[in-house]
Image (cartoon, rainbow, N blue to C red):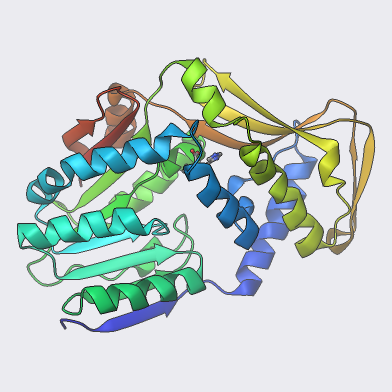
Length: 326
Ligand code: AVJ
């Protein structure tokens, strides 16, 4: 129905609380200790990420936006989808680039934004409804690694393109990345598509500063996960006693962010009835951001059952947009 609006909520606070507790219990018992990056993004973390996208060193955001600007009409014509699904739809400028191009291509009927933040999604849908009154909007609040089954199906005779931008696939380890792509493939019908944004491996002198900026915004973003644990789990992390670390792991082709304890510490996590010891210099792994080559993208996509249809790369070969077909 043109202009209709729907919002499905598949994520409750209790789900999130259960997931946080199990991630923290598992991650702090592991050796080396680790925490998944999804817990960076409370309100403050999301605001810090916004500031990261404006940093001179953080090239991935700008590079993808410029690449999308240049290639989006080509993408829309190559795709022909009538439904654009956007996973983690935070970035509104990229959304509008996509919607305008698919509208120009004459195929667009429906936009399905998915995000973990209900408030962000409500705000985005209100604005989009004002600016695209004819467009059907169907928001899905949920976790993209879990709630893909709940995405609305294809319209009769139509096809969907799922956009997963920002290079966020690089935040998944190879095992979870494969499982995620298999899952995406399993909810698509043959001929439906995935538009995937991926960072490409480039000079470490370019990549490392992007994750270790001079102004220290990424350091604050990294440490924010400890604030989240203090607040949500009644923990006692001395946040300022952890240093931000970003290293390029050439063997795995990923940037790894860690938090390094600057002294011996004992941390109480009251909600888990857990006491955790950190030795001076001990590192807690908080995020990987994998960087690929066109060939490695094709390989992991093929392993999940996708064929590469088209690819667009920026002039400095730092970022790729790949249109994959199920
Ligand atoms: C969420 C994938 C866009 O890995 O580049 C930015 C997250 N972490 N700085 C990335 C992030 C540190 C970012 N993405």
